[in-house]
Length: 330
Image (cartoon, rainbow, N blue to C red; front, side):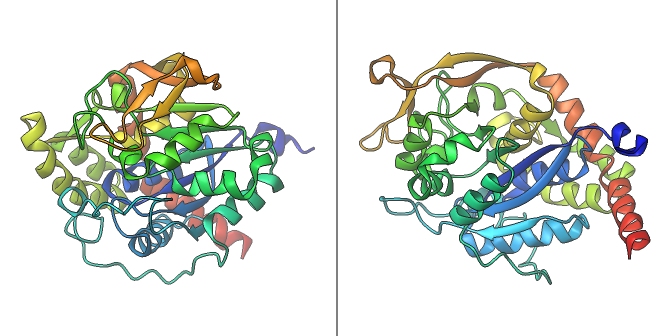
């Protein structure tokens, strides 16, 4: 092994299951720019937008960052229930604020998301962390398709759910779990390590217009893009937060992978209510004998916020570095 190889920092392999989505875009550009991570691929799912839009946006964001990663399209609707409408009022008609439909030049992997996930996680057995930041339909489909996959995934770090905090789409439910409660329950029931970064912590992590302005100064291209789309997001949150700011739900899940010391976890066996008034509620249930989920119950919100902003300020520099490396290899 060369000294150069020895000196390279370990990069944690991740696959992000995503429905981009403004805070998804924030999370992805953070992940692309963080040298501690290797984004192997993105799988897409309905949620903030229709799955076709999610796939298009994922391809666009990868190209915008000059990053090399797969994109595989996934579920267009929940496992059993009718699909809820996309969150256009939160994320915009195409998912990226006021931005019109994007036209990426790349193509998605021909495999459906669950097959892509199965084959890729088996090819890198024990190395990949799955990071779903949308409805959990693709992850549930993976478990149905390949039940033994639990032996090959390092862990699953979810943005979704809430145990102690009020919901954000109903008094009981967080949006990602609410959009497919049957899928979420299946994922929580499986015998693998799951960490849940839910509203119990993400409701405490905010960024405001001044934060994004600072990012755009350091990274005018990608940081400027994040600043532009964040304005739409902050307009939605202004009525909830009382200030022109937003919550960074999805980046928090990625930061829980790179910087877990910011989070306090409790071991809680969970199930999801699948019907009735409390549909989508994520509740403690000790009677089922399920493997406990590591639920984030407290957070150093300033640490997460600062890490998010610091890495986002590096997005343009990291893109230029990737382009330079590719030109040298070519």
